[in-house]
Amino acid sequence: MSRIRATYWDPAGTRYGLPTFWWQGAPAGYATRRQLRARGLRPGGQPIAAQILWRGVGGTRAAYLYRLDLARPKRTASPAQLAAVRAALRARRTCPTCGEVRPYYIPRSFGECLDCRDDRNPAH
Image (cartoon, rainbow, N blue to C red):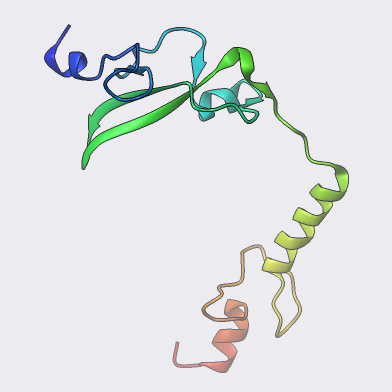
């Protein structure tokens, strides 16, 4: 075991307070939030079970692990929630000046679509 890996090896959690493993050294049965999401799961309110530490840009980096046996299935959005999200995203693409729905989000710094902004400011 290398010196760097030995620094981050604490499966009992005595040094770091949580069971700690090195990069790609966690045993089976643990997963990060991203790995849970890829499996269609979520932490489901469980506390952080372990961590992975490694040396990265700016110092020591950490990834928190959750137990797979306590993970719950991801919740699915209801049709009303999906409709509300679609309406909110459509509102972000609707120009308040001309009322057209654009294929891009209206820049908040301009407050109107790019065509309306160019019509008001011919210098741009």
